[in-house]
Image (cartoon, rainbow, N blue to C red; front, side, top):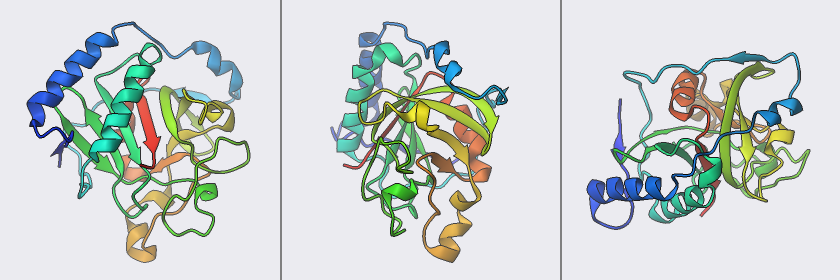
Length: 234
């Protein structure tokens, strides 16, 4: 597995990040869970599935710039803000939508070890109408097919029209329609790395976090229910 140290912009390296993670965990000690009441909004024919185990080894793409300091600071601030609604605070995911879809930009950060694993992820067609490979705008509107900005709490896994998927609950005014819009994490052929070789960019989703088909187990294992995904363009 290829991993990198998170650059937190302080120059103090891994020890500072570990200390910050422990301090933050203490400050966010109020337990929180994803409400089971949200499941009433889903179709009855969706089949729940379990969380895959954490991979012993995985072949991952490595971001050339890791997580940019300002984006990382905003993600940590969001985690603190929504602490009571995020049950698990050992890891989180950060989608850096400043980068184009040809670049690994879905960062899975271990807040204890200070390491990050980075993968490809698609953005919504409504966020990039001309299909340039770059996200132009966010939207929280129904029917927009756009990606939304802000913090999401990961919920349960199920099998739906995109195969195995994970529900997301938007925690901010900029993404609080996520559950109703069916903005989820799923895999797609258009998010596979070979799309970059043939088209120079990934395909677009309908606003979901679409990852490569071979990456889905790893993504599900690293997320799990009750963790946070933070999406932004900084």
